[in-house]
Length: 329
Image (cartoon, rainbow, N blue to C red; front, side, top):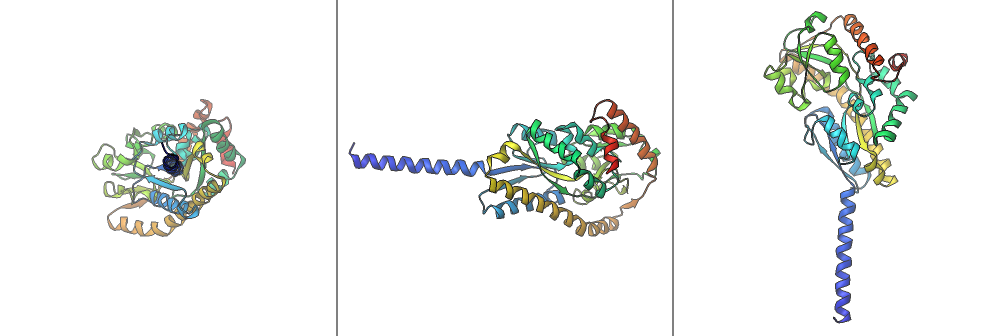
C-alpha cells in the first residue's frame, strides 16, 4: 500500500479512537439517579433541580439522569445496586440507610426525635459523622447531602385515629424498614410492606386502611383522595438524602466531585424552602376536598415505642447506648 494511503488509514483510525474515547468519557460522567417518589413530588422536583445544578456547575461535562417512581427498582434493590456500583445514585429518606449501616435504624425509629432541630443537632454530631464514614469504608456508599428537611411523618387513614386504641387492627401500608414494622406492630397495627409507588393504589382499593407518610407527600401522592383523615403523630422527622456510589464519585475529577457535592447541598436548600412555601396551599386544597387534620395524645405512642427501641437495642439492631445518645442532642 502506498505510504500516503497508509497515512490516511492511520489518520482515520486515530479519529475513530478519539471518538470512542470521547464517548467513553461522556458515558463515565453520566450519572443515573434512582428514586421512588412520583414525578410531581417535592422529592423528585428537588432531584430534577439537582440535575440542573450539576449540569450548570460542570458546564455540561457531568449530567445526572433522574429516574423517579421506582423506574430502576424498589428501594432495597437500588441501594444494593449502588453498593455494587451498577447504579450511580439513589435518593430517599435517610431511614433507608439502615439497609447499609445498622446504626441508621435510629433515624427511622418512630418517636426517637422530637423535631427537625433535634435531627439537625444529631446529624452535626460526631456520632452521625462516624456513621457516614463507615458507610463509605464498609459499603462504598457516600451521603452526598442530607439537608433535605421534610415535614414529619403522620398517619393517613380512612377512619379517624383519636388515640392508640384506634390503631389496633389497622391494616397499614409500611415501608420495608424493620424499625417501622416492629414499632407499628407493637402499637397494634397490622403492617403490610408495599412499595411506595404502589401505596396509593393499595389505599384506594382497600388493600390497606391507612399508611404513614411525610406530611409533605400526602398531596403530591394523592393519598388524600383515598383517605380523608390525617392524624398528626409526627412520629418521624428523618431527612431525605442523596447517596452516591463511592466508585462513581471517585471516578470524577476533583473539580466535578466538588460541583456534585455543592449541587446536592443547594438542592437540599431548594427542597426545604419549596416545602415551606408550598405546603400551606396544598393543605388548603386538601381541607377543601374534605380532609380533616387532627392531633392526638402522643404519650401512649411514645411510651410503647420506647419499649420497642429498648428491645431492638438489646437485640443488636444498633450500637449499645445509641438510642440514649440520640436523645441527648
